[in-house]
Image (cartoon, rainbow, N blue to C red; front, side, top):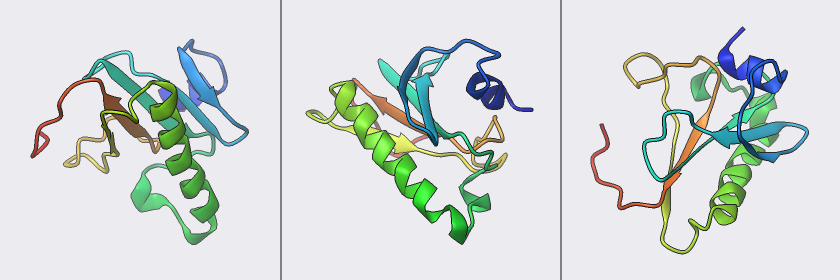
Length: 112
């Protein structure tokens, strides 16, 4: 069971900022920007690479949730970044699909 599954089950506390029946969003405990929120599906999907055609609606809900979180956090005015890491070389550290909504500062390119 991943740490995110434990957060979904409310076994570990989290600063939840958005929730639906299928999506949960909470503040990252090691923020990399003034605003750093993780948006995850409640369904255990390992990574974007593991999403299947039957997950299409869920993937859309996750993207809409990222936008809603950004608006709630006031990031829609100046801009923000949405990132997902896939696999070890992609920087994935928790093997449960998650999107990072980052903002509140100027982002640089290339990342990492």
